[in-house]
Image 1 (cartoon, rainbow, N blue to C red):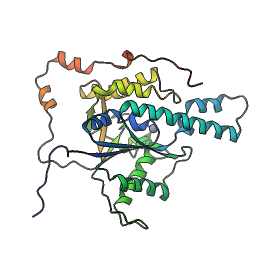
Image 2 (cartoon, helix red, strand yellow):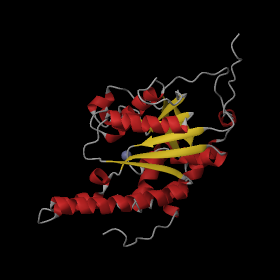
Image 3 (spheres, rainbow, N blue to C red):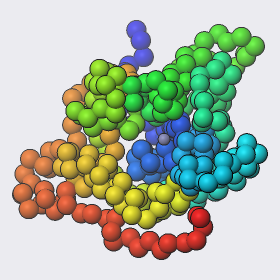
Image 4 (cartoon, protein in one colour):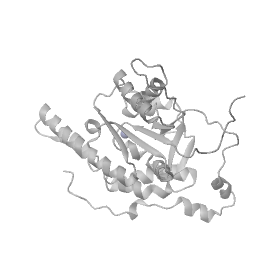
Length: 306
Ligand SMILES: [Zn+2]
């Protein structure tokens, strides 16, 4: 007779590993959800795959585009290294606001970012060290799944999860099977970033109510000055992405996810919140959906970014 199955909702402590392509992905897509788990006492580690400067330093990209005299290779490298250090500092500050303490930078290049055996081993090794219950990464077919760092990161993560569960060459560590994988940043239904993405029909299969965390998420995005996220964009981003999913699900702000593996339960998943909504007044419903936190948080321009 097998051990009796336990379908209780959550084990006492979870080990969560988020693997993101760019520095801000660590909190931009799933930061509100991570705050909930950190506050619960779960172990949360965030991996930043690329330094993100070659594709996301909007200051550097504009400089290369608008400079009257072409920058030399040495100048571009010097500026890339400078902005990589700046971006690193910004992300550490942002993650501190979010309460994310364990942040790992793999410092991959982001001009050409491909899956290699070395990358899979590096990620797999991290999985073997941390032995996570849950991994969160991007949707593998975001943007169509081709030549897009988010999708490449998701594919590398899937390879690494497989690698960690095999009898590996030259590695005697105990195998680790990751029990559940969640995809973050799921595109909104009906709008695809490319026609290839549209063929994969991404679906949001559950939503985390993050209304209580959005003030921290706005202040975290305010740290990302080199990417022009700070200030008005941070507020626009929160209202149009987290606010969009919140409104769809009847709350102020939310983060969407998609499970890789179907969830197994003993009972139908059903929450007290769902039950309470059955008796809610329309006044209460709109009061829950309507708050807009962004514009209430002051932002002061600094001269940090030229
Ligand atoms: Zn990204």
